Length: 112
Length: 112
Image (tube, rainbow over all chains, first blue to last red; front, top):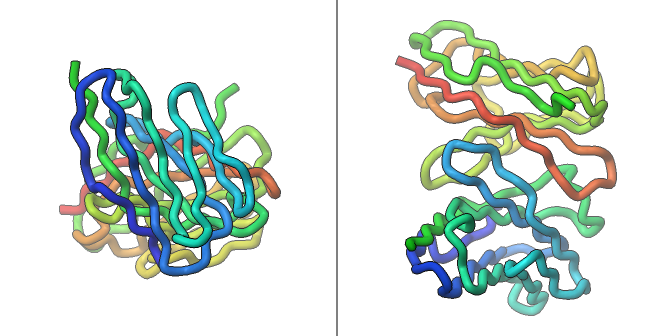
C-alpha cells in the first residue's frame, strides 16, 4: 500500500523552510527519501531505519516517528537547487532497497 | 563509468504494437527494477528481478513482460501497447543489502 505524502506541492522563497511528511497505514520499518529534479532520474537522499537516529544531509534532515508511523523531511534555508519532487519509499526492516513502495511525491518549488 | 542506461529515451508507438524498452547496467548489481511514473501516482513498481532468470511481479504488472537472461540487462516488453501505458518508465538497480536504488534517465513512451 502506497505511503501518503503531504503536502502534494509547496512553493517557497529562497531561505525559507519546508517540511514534507510521509505516512503509512502499515508499520514502518525503513523510509527512503529520493529527490527528482525536473526531467531527471530520482536520486537517493537518505534512509531512516526504525529505531535509528535522525539523519541529516547538508541542510536537509529527516526524522522517523514510530508511533505515528510517519517520517518527515526538513529542508531548512531552502536553496534554488532544492527544487524538485521528493518521494518517500517504505521498505523492509533491514533497510534494503530490495523492494520499495513509493508515495506519489511532493513537488517543491523554490523561488528567488 | 556508464552506470545504468535506458533506451530509447523517447518512443512513440501505436495501440496494439509490441514495444521493448531496454535497460543496461555496468555495475553487476543483482537487483533490477522497472517503474512507471504517472502524475498523481508517483513511482509504481511493475516488475523486479533479484538475479538472472529470477523475476517477480510488482504493483502494476498487467500488460508487461520482462526477462533477464543476463545480469546486466533487464528489458521490459509491452506485448500489445494500450493508451493507458503512456507513461515515463524508469529502470533501477541495487545491490543485495544495499539501501540505495540507482535510477536510469527514463524512457518517455507515448501510445497513440
